[in-house]
Length: 321
Image 1 (tube, rainbow, N blue to C red):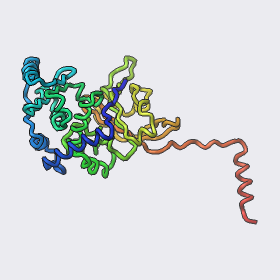
Image 2: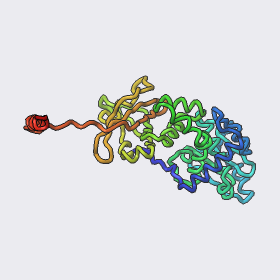
Image 3: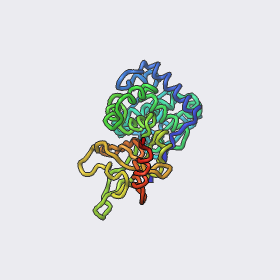
Image 4: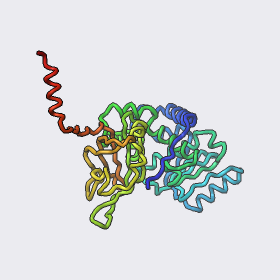
């Protein structure tokens, strides 16, 4: 079962988040600089970053006591805290065990909490964990902070200008991750959601043996462009990928890391077959599958009995005397 994608904001909420992110990017003179200068953005936000701290129970109690002394409201994490924002001292603290590829995003997420006044007016201490940093989170403030982090990391509209005048594919998305400094997952996600093509990202868990000589790869998430979702039921792609699945040829096996572009056939919302071009990249933790709609599958012409004779007769009638 794939995880839901609840990063949706209303147009008004999205416009507000983008406004704050754009202002911070301009204050940091970050637009058009690569990789995205995270430290300059944090400096422009006037936050102090501590990124070698162990966010254990003792540390959290000290911060919570300080917040409580000021009669402030605390927004608690749902599991082990990976990052937090403390509003009084504008302090961003990142747990030392956060994986390196995710550190920049977590910093920007916490900075997002501190850059939106409607959040800091309500909470003086905001804690984040694996669940609140995930796009599936249903909490509005966390969705806003996630979107803020993406807008800042990929410099708003700058990403699309650099992304979509290049050939579509995995290598382009990987190059963009290196250019902007984002993780592969965050970049692939942005690549699809801003893409003018009908395309889709499918995130697979590592494949495992099914016990019968085959394999099974569970789908972690499906992220589709608006145009892709108009053509296909994206939810139908959430079934585990096995040897009978349409995407079976896109699952890296053994030491494979890349699956070159190849045709796969899907069924559209009208029940008609269509050809897609798919390719994949195994990051070591998950497989990122990119799909792009290509064209309808040519249907076989059915020749009815007597059809050849009928066409021959039509040909004779059409010939001039």
